[in-house]
Length: 209
Ligand code: AMP
Image (cartoon, rainbow, N blue to C red; front, side, top):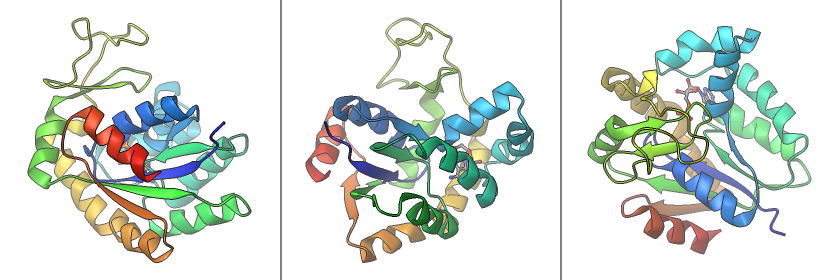
């Protein structure tokens, strides 16, 4: 059994979630997406959800200490995993090192997609309440606007509106993109083009893991 520990980096709309889902299934390891976990906290109206909601709707970053504490609990019982959407800042990357200690990361995959393609993709993105991701027109659900996996309605995320997407991209460039260099220096980085069909991209990723 593959218990690899992987991080998927990339701008919003790079296809991290879609690819992380597929690859995690294939390898039999959990797909851990901090964005999905936070949306779940918001939906359940927890303390954390109440603190995170407005920040997420504006496309800004939830404070490091909150996200790190949430992820620390989730990683306790996970040996292998694909992390999607974490780390997003250098303090988060350092905290991840601490959390993993004697079971370090195996690979960091950076999915690269040009800005104009990102905007096109995000405007077509639809998600179900459990985080399964579709994209119109290239990857729609089989039945009109209900999730293939759990039959729930798929919708546009509130933070996928254009002006919020622009802010999320700026936040990515400022806070998260420097992590590419951080992981390159540790010899963990694999850069993969995120342009192409879902299958093509999946194979590129599997080749570098
Ligand atoms: P995502 O689904 O990964 O695009 O995340 C959606 C939103 O959740 C982001 O725009 C942030 O507001 C918040 N979020 C998710 N992961 C993190 C993280 N690691 N650090 C800070 N905020 C996060």
